[in-house]
Amino acid sequence: MQKLTDSGLIPHLKKGSEGAFRVLFERYHVQLYCVAKKYVKSPELAEDAVQDVFLKLWEKRFSLDSAKSVKGFLFTMLRNHVLNMIRGRHQEIISAYDECPEKVSHKNVIEDELVYKEYEKIFEAGLDELSDRKREVFELKTMDGHTNSEIADMLNINIRTVKTHYYSSSTFIKKYLRNHAGISGLWLLIVLSTFIIQ
Image (cartoon, rainbow, N blue to C red):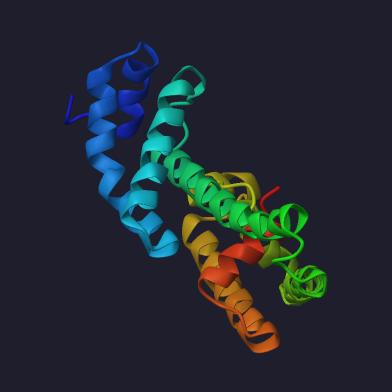
């Protein structure tokens, strides 16, 4: 079963094959862990994220499509999990004020909300600077989690063009946010989680 492609493993996985599940786990868990740890900065949280992703893969195995990328499915779920964790931390700050008003300044909470609104405006302004096609590719990949191949089919363009447009647009957005809002890295993920992933 180790020699099967991802798409070849899906029929077995849908039948409840633990062997197929184990092969996919061995194939991708290290990559997923490294990506998660890069952003959550905690081995324990990264491990939890990877376990959650594979648990969801098992739970959703009956709805998997052999024509779609399992790797893309896994990394999209990981992205959403990590972004939810980051969003959750932001909400904890707001909740802390509600529960312990003597410990958190009301003024600071309001200022935080205003900062997020300003980031949203800057991000939208950055998107508006992109050409229609680059924005379309960026949104399909970043917001909807489509693979390069899927985007190429949807837009009737070749995969190399998709990669070029995505690289160009994502590089531009990161630079735009850095220059106009002074944010990058983890803060970029926070902005994406707050204003893109709904």
